Length: 427
Image 1 (cartoon, rainbow, N blue to C red):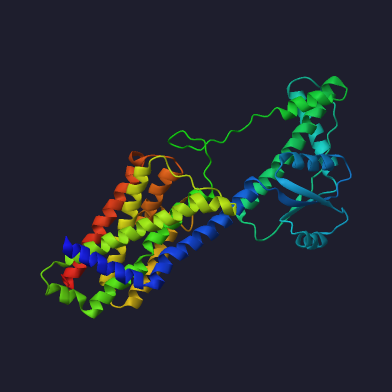
Image 2 (cartoon, rainbow, N blue to C red; image 1 turned 180 degrees about the vertical axis):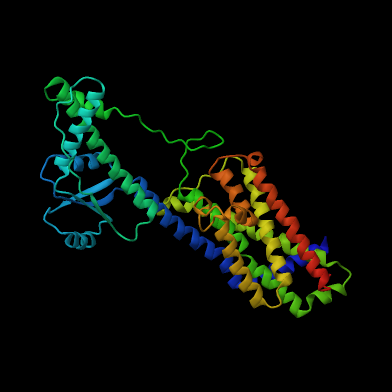
């Protein structure tokens, strides 16, 4: 026990002297969590809470264009600003940049006439099919509706633009449905539809209640903090490869391994010492970053981190993730010939593993060909385990299928490390 304690003290002193390593292990992940969470939270608020600035150039002479604008306001997705109907496309483009508008639309000149004519023709066809009217209506060629031009800022992502198009399409469908019902009522009753009846028909829509599929039945909606804090904590854990991997290489180059073989002890004591020391470091990373999410984030207008109900499960998952990161770092240090190799390969490999695991890019956004590749990354299983606790509100038993592969990675990596040490005659 004394030998183990002595080696732990030695590794702790080496760690404290490694100022760059400590910065990479603590300062960098804290900065990443703050920056990425702030950016994603702003995006969530833009989509879910804030209205999208929308410029409207209404060239339509009829009342349907105004009804379309009123419908867009009722949807609640847009902050509408009407501009002069005499603006050209080029002038509207300039106005967008001046007003910092993300989207602008142009309502065509024949919008009202074409919508009304289409509604008349469709209602007549429908009533004829029902046998309620004769085919006495003289039909001509339906006027072609010029497309509603939608101009958007190139910085908008495709998924965000699809949401905007969905809002515009919904407004168009409401206008078309309203005109169709009015024409059918007038044809049957030969008088205008009462406004109260029109409101009753169009307003009573079935609502949509959003409920996250949490395993504990909780209805709390996950936020940017719940997504980012666990993800970047894992990234921070694995980035100890810079400090720990370099430490292993330094001991090899300095001859520490050979000197240890002349002492009445076993190198496995030193290996265990490194794992205990850095396991404390990884748990410290978890504590620091999670504490920021709980206590600091609310003071900087970011959502608070809500810890899962199963705190024991959270501790076990954190231990497994930290141990897996330590195993990987020691393995890199074992096979690297220089500190530069350990630092370079370690940093690049962690970024690549983070990218294919869903930390940098969400797993659902990856192509199908990555379905197998991402499961080869230990960071993927660490992330899925954390998400099972934080987002799905599950317990340890619910995430065993994700936690057990982490244990498998630890065993495999530790085995590869021991084989490498024996081949180099270091143990």
